[in-house]
Image (cartoon, rainbow, N blue to C red; front, top):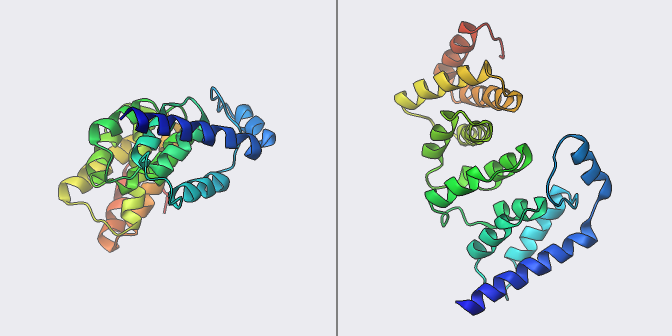
Length: 217
């Protein structure tokens, strides 16, 4: 066990050192200008981070640490690139709901909320349940993740049951009139994806948005 922990620490150290070669000061400064203040931000672009994740996954020598342990260790680092890599490396079928809840509480920015939604949350075995739980929250990043995940599920043709339809529409209408700009945009996108599930869904979405004087179709 101690040896595996040492392997994890060594791999995290190697990954963090590799950020020096990939550093993009202009990207990092642009993020700071937009209010994205991380403890440490190397400005590594998302395509580069994806390449890193793919290289790590294809490393046949990486028997230990497991991707789960590595993702857990990377997420604990207060470094933008580490957290994004963690979302790319964590096996969705292995992360327990309670660990998922801890990660949600520790999301530091809109960017990380979006990355964890697209790279990990949408693939969870219990994604629909969590998504509906999150859109009912009063926290910005919970709602943001919830609507992003539902958008992806709708895009993949997953249709909610009657109760889910009513809950989604109710929460989406609240979000569309809420104070969080990021959540309003995500809710609007999810409503559009919902409408694309079929004619009945389109009519429901149009009727719902029209009831609050919104024309998004």
